[in-house]
Length: 418
Image 1 (tube, helix red, strand yellow):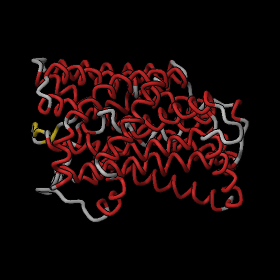
Image 2 (cartoon, rainbow, N blue to C red; image 1 turned 120 degrees about the horizontal axis):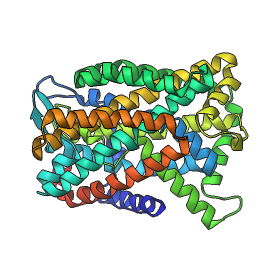
Image 3 (cartoon, rainbow, N blue to C red; image 1 turned 90 degrees about the horizontal axis):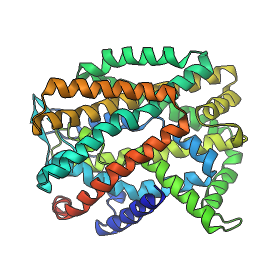
Image 4 (cartoon, rainbow, N blue to C red; image 1 turned 180 degrees about the horizontal axis):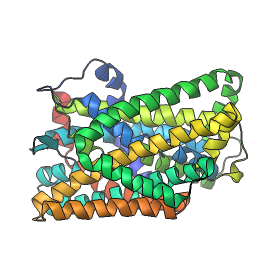
């Protein structure tokens, strides 16, 4: 996974130069455009759904485990990689709009669609769709359910078994009732939890402004190992930061294009800019704030593993109420991610059904069974074991998707020029 992370980083830097850093045009573009062709799902709405899929354990447990294992310097490399990896998000989500299809009144698309049409490779599209189906059932969702079950155990003393049963019931009620319900849920949950989270963290940071210079100094100095330069330590910190950033925003993995395809964007490139903005919010803003929040209290990191560190820091800040506040963020962020991941996997289940002669009902039953299996895996494994599953999923998806992005470079340049 370490070599894979470095290769991804290098390609992101090269593509940023090739496309003349559209990252710098992002804010102007996003705040001036939210157009649709016929009043359908807007780029803004799909941004909220994708943020719901991303703003989860990557922002909370991903950050805390990264700091516990690799130290504060991990935050530095999460930010650096996020900036360059925005180019992946820009390109893949533009492609999702170019190659989307209308199925049963809803736009569907994603990486498997632009692989099949753009590369004219049904075989590679099948492999990617299969990987994405597995990733969004038994490789990525377990960390979300693990976070929910661990939070329930630590804060409310609820057995993980009970948590698992409750989650399965909620999944049946909410997630198995169509994409429109998922969109409405994301529109209500994501802005509320994101704004509340940011405001609380900013207030805490404001009242600890005297510590911010030292915290930022620690993040940069340990990120570059300035105090005592050690190449192996730098390499490990850098690789872990890239991996945590990659999981946090999923840029380049080909997952979010399935959500972006829902939008009825006026121009394909609109979606590319909006999803770049999503990477900024998800990693550069939220992950950085979480890292600073944790480091203000300089806890003994060796005593923690993930969710327990977040709960501890909130308790130090807000007393007994802090544990309940932490549980709210951990549970809602993780559940919003489950909603987004369910939609991603379902889109590819539908793709497999329609393009490879698999009966729709059979495919959906198999998909839902795998998704339930992911919930069970999450409540029966540890946080670190779940991150191993995540790394495997990222290798599967990223190795194919980035190759396709590079192959279809001329098409993206055409739309960027227009």
